[in-house]
View: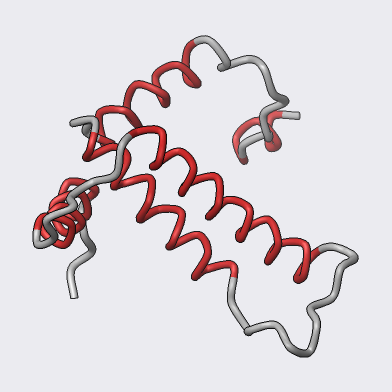
Length: 116
């Protein structure tokens, strides 16, 4: 199966949401949903990598599932504001590759190691 592009994911979410009379939530409600999903992701990260074990009564969820929930809400948010996430990604990568290009210590590549 071919991998989906970001545009295809945004279209898929839009087709799903468009079947309901309610449509997309307001930006403020969407932000609240995103915050809720981020909290659920944080809880899972704390269970898997932190010091807080799950209670025996808690449902088994995964970091992957919580990231998927967060991505869905993020796509809904972008769609509701008519934002192309691929373009948004390109803008932020340009920013990181220009403004922040020397901010972090880069790994040496094989050629540099051989010359040293």
